[in-house]
Amino acid sequence: MLERMAPDSRSTLEEYILKKAQSVRFFSYGSNMDESKFRQDMKGKIGLVNRTTVTLTGFKRTLSNDSKRHGIAFSISCSPEDKVEGICHDIPIELLEDFLEKEGVLKKNDPSYRVIKVTIPDQNEPILTLCGLKSKSIGQFTLEEAKEALKYVEKSIKGAECCNINPLDMKKNKEELQEFIKTKENHT
Image (cartoon, rainbow, N blue to C red; front, side, top):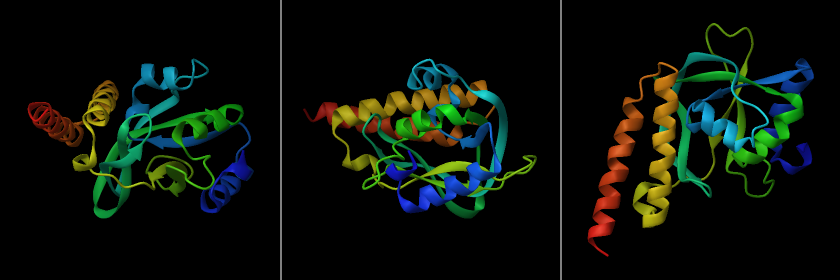
């Protein structure tokens, strides 16, 4: 699995795994917060294990990463004055490859995300998360991509609400997508 990763993701993951034997702790901030979607994406092998609601400071969530499955997906970027609410959850080592494959990390020459290490208050150790590598804006969408992106954002909102996370920023993305779709459909 590690040979299939970009060097920066590989070194972050290698260092982290050496310190942990049973599982890897991840911060998720998009559709992975929705238990049913996460189970479906993981082909029923796992749900959200040891889930806790947390806040990552110094980062901002944006709907800005190109996704083959969703048209577009959330990413995070450094932003000292912002914060991202999400969840921490465990991925057992034996399912780590499945998880990273699903997220597009294992495309060595063209990954969708890179693995980064972050610090979250109340967590006893550094946490891993994913940072998007393929910038895309809603204006670049086809109608079908926008419709897929809307489904993705709706699942993300559902997951956030189930975890008592304020989805206001995601709801703004939903409205933007709905308006984009409406405009596209009126011009076809």
